[in-house]
Image (cartoon, rainbow, N blue to C red):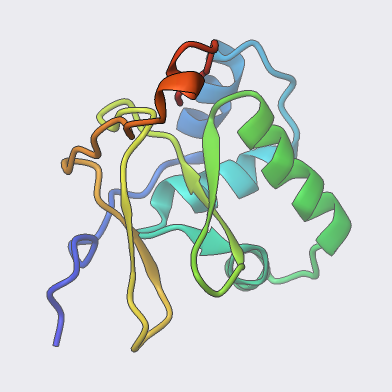
Length: 141
């Protein structure tokens, strides 16, 4: 049964579009960066490192070095073009940051299929911290 938030297919992004997005962000463009970012943009839900690697290798028909892939995923997170989340299974998953999504949004982890889904239209309230913490400076992102 298909009733998850991301069951409608995402539009595919061309290499030229992804290249321009990276350049607009002021970043150096490489083939692997374009391929990794395009994979995240086209994904319907956050992907684990092995899932990204599998999609890349099936689309480019050649092996992808897992360390280089991980560095590129972390780079996308560091520059703000992707975000990294973890669920109860403690697996890091990566998702492209989209303009229509707020920086903070909740996620749903399906324990039946193991997939994690972004819930970009849902609002998660700012947590209420104890008074002593509220008086301190905190970043909420």
